[in-house]
Image (tube, rainbow, N blue to C red; front, side):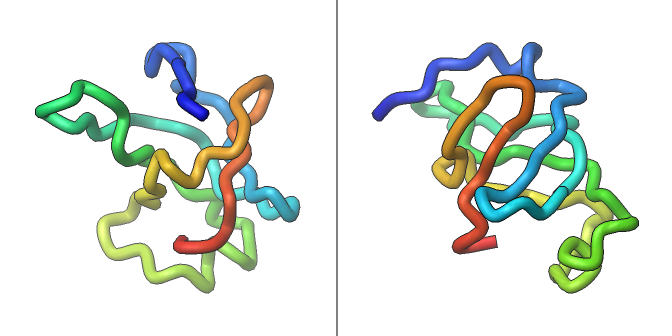
Length: 83
């Protein structure tokens, strides 16, 4: 299933996992230069989240493959596998 979203509409949206962990807020995206499609979401991590603190975040930002996105509505829901 192809997901069509305008990246500007995602900025500031809360990002959560499909099992309820709050990852933070969508901040930016990396695009595939060949296809022009979103490849990675850059998330400002929620520093209060125990789950986020267990992740290995080196740059201060959480990078989530866009292929992990399950749903986009009021929240962005991602599959936790592969984080």
